[in-house]
Image (cartoon, helix red, strand yellow):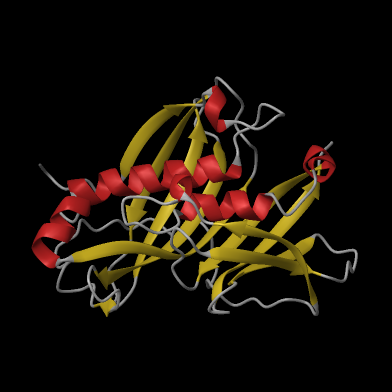
Length: 252
């Protein structure tokens, strides 16, 4: 199989991937990103099976930012495309674009991945594993540096969420898209009825496993801005599991 610099896949938005408004759920968008990234990794010779069998390693998403211009609707067809940047020693940057059937950009994303040892869960160098890659010269879709954000001030607890069977993936940890559902559940249905997320940046700090309980916190002070900080903490270890910054906009 010849390595493809830019990988594309078409999706039809089905009813299981939309919310009560008939718009694509943010967590479903993360699932599409995960799917197309997995398929492209297979094409490049560093897919999940090869990583486990040859290198005893796993790909793990650690940071991601998504900017959304428009949420696709139930029944709409979209194309998700992805391409990597030149691997660094411990980090692998992967970019995404989401387009409608006319080719209009609906969303852009930048993600950061690492490789961990399947047994020790410690970092492995990316370069020896990903020594050959098809170069793609297009620019990063979002000009940003991932990870540089903090809460505005004191935080308040929103709720506690146990991690169960339906939340974990083949790596036996909380799937990256389920974090997004946990975050979206921090807000009432009325908030979701009136507001949409136009940008999200999330840092996955520590793995979470079945049986863990995550306590979710968000900004205590409403300063009138459209920026909201949310984080999740492992109740038992008190380790930060994730932190997230949302930029929301009023639906019209």
